[in-house]
Image (cartoon, rainbow, N blue to C red; front, side, top):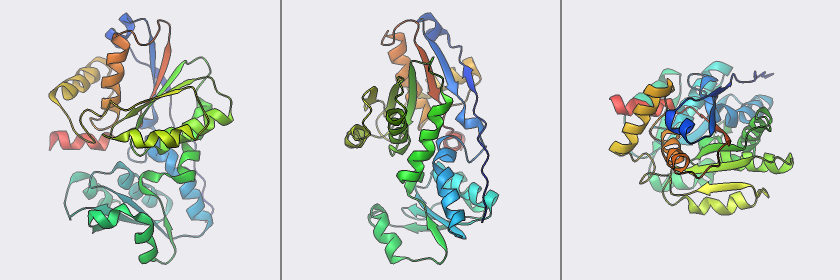
Length: 290
């Protein structure tokens, strides 16, 4: 299959938020969320080379892994429908129904639920469950190809920006940015914000990318993955009403909540130009209104 993927629409927009302007810093969003309603943000970036590789190997089915509210599963389902692949999602845990999985099925994805113990060892599961003409995508779209896709994004960030902020789940997006920054001799300060509790184990992998100008914030998880608080929900509602930009409570909202504290407390020098990756994930907001 000769697959052609267009460069995503992802403008950089200034964000006018009173508290940040009072702190004397300029803040911008890299609107990765606008690239596609469902194949958006870092999901599009990480799937890019996986899709090209699947097409070049004449695979007919994309198989991947995710939890019951996985944006990656939804992105893969939509990408499969758009580019002519069958899709199979291996879902962690007992069978459930929700809006995200419903959308996956709407795009034609078949779902297979497996117990959490079996889910942990993806490689063994793949080896024990061969599927004809399948291309297996790692959880979250990671791996070397996923990181390459994220690394490409760095070329779209002008040198005038002092900091680039990214939320961190599995760590693939941040690893890709770190590797590309090292390869391109970038001077930008990369800031990663963990949304999972206990994310310290990712630090060793980040150090191996040989880029020193970065900070990995491990206390930005807000109690754990997908955990919320009234304070977090109030903040993202205020932010949306003040800027017109939606941010989910699982990834970008937590990063912004923690980043906001740092900005108003003077962590960033006046005159700093901060660009934030808005990596989409807005389907995660659906659970707030269920």
